[in-house]
Amino acid sequence: MAAEDKTSLWTHPLESDGWYRAHNALRADMQAVKGMLTAFQEQVAAGKAIRSEQAAAASRFLDAFFKFLHHHHQNEDDIATPYLSSRFEMPSKICVDHQRLMELMDAFDSGSKKLLASTSLEEQANLLPGVADVFAQLQTLCLEHFKEEEEEAMPLMRKHFTPQEIEQNVVSKILRGMSPNDVGAFFRTMGRDEFRVFAKREGIPFFVRWILAWHCRGYNKKIWLPFEQQCLAAA
Image (tube, rainbow, N blue to C red; front, side, top):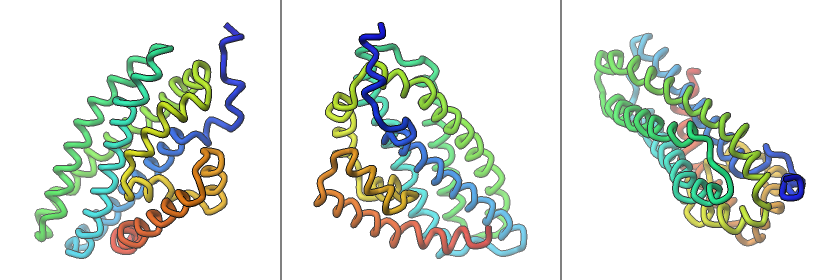
């Protein structure tokens, strides 16, 4: 009923929600992984093996990416979906997708580790197409899955719950479980002003913002910049 519809209480755009922003961060990370695989394919095709420093930078970035993606899906399965399901039925395909996503993540994780552990140009050339193919499947399904959540689950969340209810019962629990690298990945693509607006709207205290910014700097220095320099330069 119209009187029960809480959508009007959400005064900021759907695209500004933390759930949507997590998708944006993951989309950016997946685009970076795709760029890395393209660069490595071009490099190996030119007769130059993936170097040890490239493999190390790629491994650090992929480890952070996998943990962030796993954490995101676990948050949905363990925190968001059970709470949201107390007032509406979550679209079934969204829940089913997670099992297939986990299978593809495991396949890409094992394939990429084998690739980056290899020092043989011939072996790298043989492994790269399979790794790239599995990642393409993972990326395609992730993008479709994110779109379904944004177009179906998120509007239902806004209809049935107030912003305060989601903050207290979903967002606060997710934030407590985020690692420093999760924080860095989440905020990597946000500009300084965008970060301030988001933090203020979410009610994040100033001293906590400082800690978040410190984690972001550490992530950029130790993970993102070495990955960008070593693995994306050729692309």
